[in-house]
Image 1 (cartoon, rainbow, N blue to C red):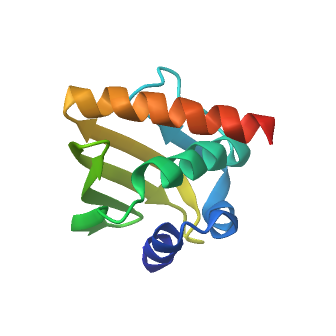
Image 2: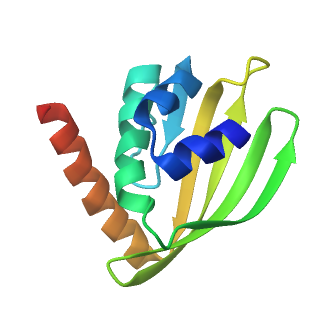
Image 3: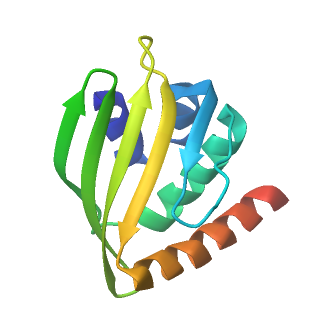
Length: 126
C-alpha cells in the first residue's frame, strides 16, 4: 500500500502500470461491465488520477486485510464534496488484481462520470 500511496500522490502513471497485474479488474460506479486487463485498468486509473487527485484529495481511513485494503477518501470536485472508498486487492507479489471505486453523493457520481469520460476520450486520441 505504501507504493500505491506514493504513486497516487505523485500521479505517477508509469508507476501505476507497474503496480497492475496483467489481469487487473477495475470496478467503476458508472460502468456496468468492469474492464479486465492491465492496459484498460491502467487507462481508467490514469483518468481517475486526473479527475480525483487535486489539492483537496485526502485518504481519511485505511483498513487492511490479507491481500486487500479499503481506503476512504474525500475530495472536492467542481464545488461538490465527494466521499468515497477505494477497495484494492493484490497478489503475493504486490500487484493490484482488483480496484473497486465507490463514491457518494449521486451528484458526485454524475460529475465523475463526465470527468472520467472526458479523460478517457483524451487518452484514446493520444
